[in-house]
Length: 137
Image (cartoon, rainbow, N blue to C red):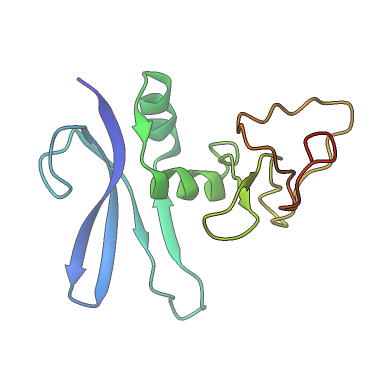
């Protein structure tokens, strides 16, 4: 049984409220769950911020036994300081070749990793800027 940590939607129409749940990976979004791990309210409160509450010890327990967080939950747990930042890839333009350098999640800019070899798995003869390489042209 694959356990997923994911959001279950509650609340009225146009006023979402989510609960963070540990659930079987095959169960539906709002279906049967194993444990409620917290809540997330995406609508800004009186202070202007989004509200979130987590049971840190239980979230860490489920992660330690192999539960897989969904993508939105992974971002929430990153903001709470439980998980490291998720890997991000930058795209030069829509549908174009990807820049394979890792992205700093705080600034959104590529990290300068000097002395590290980045292997590009694309087999195109073009360089990253769209111009053909001098060796092949």
